[in-house]
Amino acid sequence: MNKLYEYLETLETIDSFGLTKIPNLNEIKYALEKNGLEIESFLKQFEMFSNVKKINILEMPTYYSDIKTGEPLSFKKDYLGEDCKFSEVVSFNHTSQSKDFNFNDEIDLYMIYLSPKKYDIKNLDCGVWVFPSMYSPTNFKPLKKIEIIWSPEKVQDVSGLNDLQANEVLKETILNKLSEILNSDKPLEPNIPYTRDIIIRCSPRSVKTLVDLVIKYD
Image (cartoon, rainbow, N blue to C red; front, top):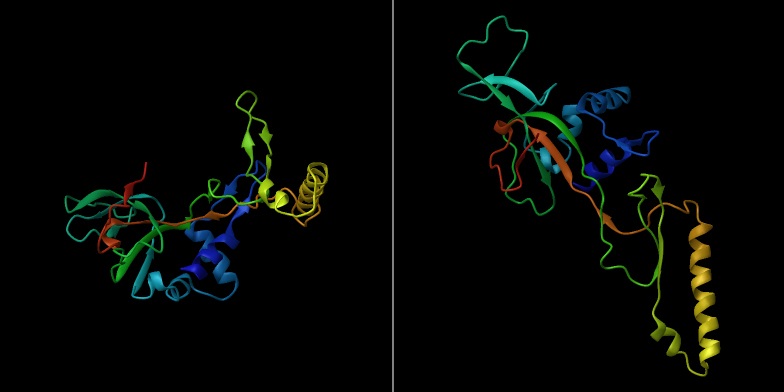
């Protein structure tokens, strides 16, 4: 899963508004073909797809499918008849804890991408932390936030310092940490730990067990 995660992250781009653009499967397929790779063989190298025998790519999140098998049917057919139904893909998060999740032998994949970053701001230790962009509630202008966390006890534990000296040491320590951040290669990039899940959007028939994580995509 880690290798797939890393690859999906390399495909993301940032648009002129600072928003992350998520590639669709056809864009991923095109990027792979430029390097002489097929998307089906490429995905099968990852554990999640290792037991899949055939991968179909869905062009749209809604489609007609065979009423008995769930197999997607072509919109180009002149007559679909009563043996079909209107279907839509399901969307869910796949994490390392998704132990009940398994693909069937044949799957219909619409999209696979990474969830937004979930920053862990509740467990920050001492340091200088650059937060992700936020927006002003009054004019919606982007804002940046840098937070400095320190432990006064660590300074007080240094023997032989009076209060004035301790304050000077503390001030120097904070300024040094802030300088390290501002003079780094990416000074305003968020440095807060985060996690991301792999989001899969596929046909219901693709999955052996639709676990509780499955949600209907609107």
